[in-house]
Length: 146
Image 1 (cartoon, rainbow, N blue to C red):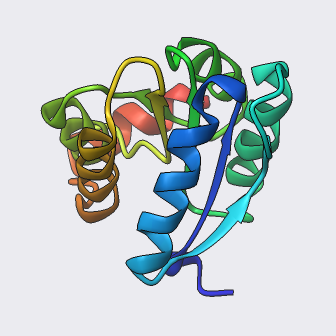
Image 2: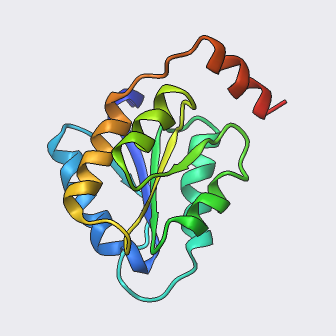
């Protein structure tokens, strides 16, 4: 599997519609997308899907992931409990860029009830295109897991 062009994505019922649009967007950009669920709009616990995506990033099965729920808050809390996961809840372009540039975020979290489709596409593109700057930021990130 080409990790550079593979990504795992998961959501709860509140963000199902946006997840489906993002899957199509990513597919059209040449990505292999692993869908961790949910697969419809029936009420589910965000925790289950957050854990699936965070575990896959934590154990390095995937370099990056995307999580979505209504606000993004719950998914952020779940994902950041996993070792080596740096999940960033973003709803503006600057935060998405800085999450990668300075924090080497490996999971982008979006609030499906907060942002619209176009902004979500832009956030994902910035997240995928922005490299980690390294340098002094690497020491800070390394100290998170120590």
